[in-house]
Image 1 (spheres, rainbow, N blue to C red):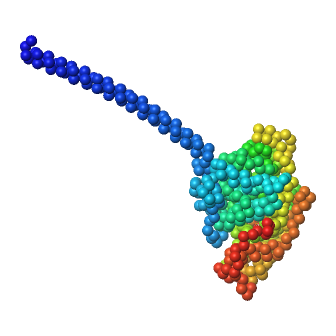
Image 2: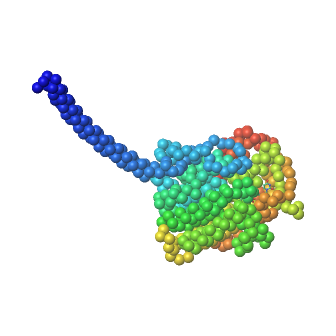
Image 3: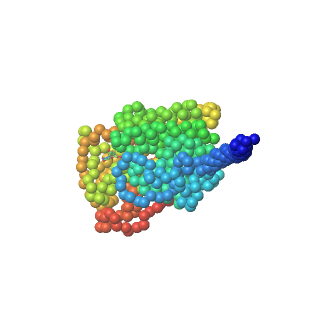
Length: 486
Ligand SMILES: O=C(O)[C@H]1O[C@H](OP(=O)(O)OP(=O)(O)OC[C@H]2O[C@@H](n3ccc(=O)[nH]c3=O)[C@H](O)[C@@H]2O)[C@H](O)[C@@H](O)[C@H]1O
């Protein structure tokens, strides 16, 4: 073979060897690549599975961290009293909080233990009551009274800013001292309600969470629908479909449902189809909704028509409370007169009397007859009662009592009642409540306002010197007792 050819042949052989070697390398590389690809697939799948498993575990043990928040922490005290646009207080917005400020997460085992402990009755035959609006005025008093007699109580409140949330936090702290947990939660949170009814066999619900205030409905109509209509439905849904056994429900209606009714005293048999305010209309709607849930699901439901409830730890948006503040501050107050020049009159009802009425209604509620399956075994009680004082007092007289107790004159501005949903008078006939659970209001406006002013002076650290109230001076420690429970 010629050299060139040999060279060429030799080159060809070398090239073939290189090619073969390269092919082997390529095959090896491709095998390794396939191996790497297969193992990375496996790794990916394993990672996805492990992540899913972790998410499921997390959701089972800490559902609240994913969906809602609860807190028992306290907000600092502040003195603003005029209604603000309602919103959840900032302290309820964080999604990762401890149940008792002790590091235990809510949701999961620790959360359920606390919920059950609070809701468990302390004596045989006692009730287990879910109280909504428990950090509110009537809710806090009722919760303490129930706990005081050995009933189990679990509270809910959304701590909105309709009025000073620090007052609600102070009530919550007071309840915590007595062993009552108030969860930071909203009645429109259906998943939460479902979870609570799954965790605790409540015998009763005392449903007091609502958007209160007659005149504020002009400013924030939708909040009334959200709390007093949608919230009520949410509560009834949970009680009817997710509780086993179904609890009996006692809830707060209002004297305002009598609206333009002129027959007095107001009796449960009188017309309630002429509400004067949106607030009244939502409460009247609530009574109709209660009828439907009682009829379909066999829920035992009692509506209580409260008449201008007042007293210690009260609502700063109400006239007696805001007037007291204005008198102390030297600010003017506005008194509404009817078009014919008459004073507006209210059947002011003292908180201790209302608490007795609420407990009486709970004790006599009678059982629900439905079950989670949606079937009822027969008719269940459907009741409605007035809880008033039976003796209307002119608002000007209420102001005169406050002036005397505070030792200071009010700067009064008298105007004709604007068209704001107000009604000229209220007056309760309470014979049905007296007959069915011995309700007998026993507190005069003089005595009740004295208790209120005692608390007011202590709570806001006011100093009464020479008959005059001076703001900002501390003479006594802030009282942390409620007359209803102490
Ligand atoms: O029984 C109820 O179902 C309702 O009671 C309460 O409503 P009301 O009876 O309207 O109480 P409240 O505001 O204290 O006004 C009292 C009086 O002061 C007069 N009033 C009021 C304000 C003012 O600036 N001037 C004035 O003269 C006013 O004209 C009135 O005559 C609850 O707030 C409400 O949530 C609901 O529970």
